Length: 72
Image (cartoon, rainbow, N blue to C red; front, side):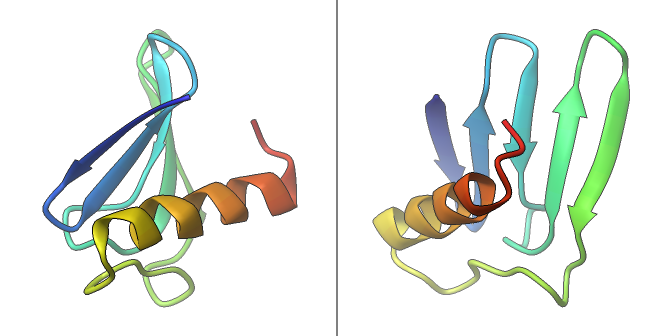
């Protein structure tokens, strides 16, 4: 998996066309499939947040959430 962190937003690329991400404020979890033009919200903005965390902590928290649910 490849990771991008843009300010508060975290993006975890599964492959070249699919990724998990938070919104621009670092809240919620979304799964985006660019080929199917599909965006699904997996966790609400009040249920998940990385806002204000250090860079590595943001990545770690999203990685744990994905691993715990085995959604990749």
